[in-house]
Amino acid sequence: MSDTNTFSPSILRETNLGLQRFDILDHMLANRELELTCPITADSVADTIRCLLYLQREDADTPITLYINSPGGEVQSGLALYDVMQALTCPIRTVCLGLAASMGALLFISGNTREMLPHSRVMIHDPLIGGGIGGSALSVKARADDLMRIRDVTAEVIARHTGMTLEEVFALTATDTYFEAEAAVEAGLADRIITSL
Image (cartoon, rainbow, N blue to C red; front, side):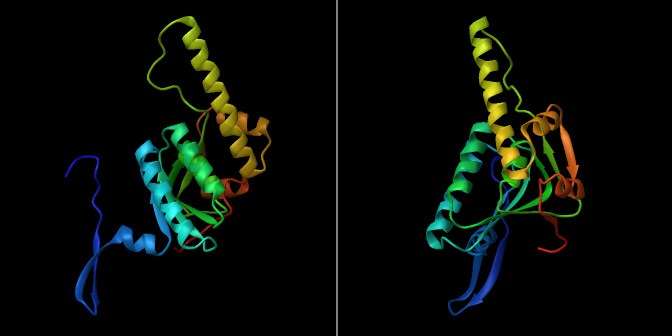
C-alpha cells in the first residue's frame, strides 16, 4: 500500500445474499456523512466535491454531515470546495473533530450548522506564501499582490459566516489564532459544542 493511501476498515453484514463486506466509507456515504481528515489538496477536494454532488443529486433537501480534522492546505482548492458547499441546496452540517486549521477552519465555519467536540479547536490565520520567493522584482510584487487579494477573499468569507467585521478578522488572522471549542462558539466560528455524534 502506498503512503498516499489510508486504511479504510470494512464492516460485515449478513444479508439475504449471505455475509457481505462493505467499506465503512461507502456506509458513511449512504448515511450522507463525509470526512475531510487530511490536508486540503486538489485531490482531497475533488473526492469531497464528487461525493457532495452525488448526494445533492440523490436528495437535494436532506442535510449532509462533513467531519473536519484538517491542518489546512491549498487555498485555491479550498475555495473550490467552499464554492460548491455554498451552491448546494441541501444543508451542510460541519463537525470539527480535533483541529480545523487555516483552510480547514474556513470550510468548517462555512457550514449551515457548525458543531465542535469539546476538545476540538479552530485556528485561523492569513494565507501563507509557499515555495519560497524568487524571480524579478515585478514577479515578486505580482505574487505579493495576489497573496493580499487572497487574504481579502478569505477574510470576507470568515466575516460573512461569523458576523465579525473585516477589521476584527484582519486583527485575528495577523497571527495564528487558536480557539478552543467554547471560545469558537463565543466568537461566532461555531454554533455549539456537542458531546455525542
